Image (cartoon, rainbow, N blue to C red):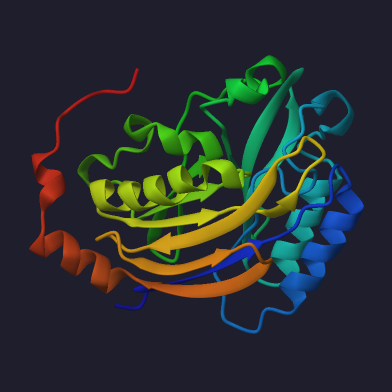
Length: 260
């Protein structure tokens, strides 16, 4: 099978608070150092700023500096670059996960579940559409942080995707939920799950332990990194995914529903 493998690089950084230049410079050096083959390079939620509630001063348009930087990186290193940034579009602010391809095409997913506990719903507009993208014959469902707590939104109906990809700024005090729910999403959706988080501290007193992880369709932990910055490339195998789904066709018995 020519497209059976998917090479994903997870970058778990210590984000410099609201300093786009410092963060983008760091990411560029990290991406330059990747020696492994890569199809997709994943950065965390709000990777250029940290999880800020100041979109009025930090937001960019879709033709802004960060989006252009992502496009340049994608072209230069022949990879898809993804992660979420603060975007202003049609007068509204979004926590937008961008999917930037080396051919110049840009897809995106706007975070559906805004984190009201931190006031995100007061500053940003929620998305209402799931986004399943494709690369190398794989289908990837894009999700952002708090979406992880809502399994209906991620439900894999009729094997419509192969990988569930979460980018996050998920604090250490709730890391048990992060690790447990990533594993649960893999098991219940019979798919690979990739979660990319950050490490370090922010000015609001939050500490981030990272715990970026990859789980198999059976919920097996394939990789995880705690507390330290990381850049790790993992190869996923679709033949293993298809074998698992054939031998254990659990999704065929799933409840039927429609997302309104």
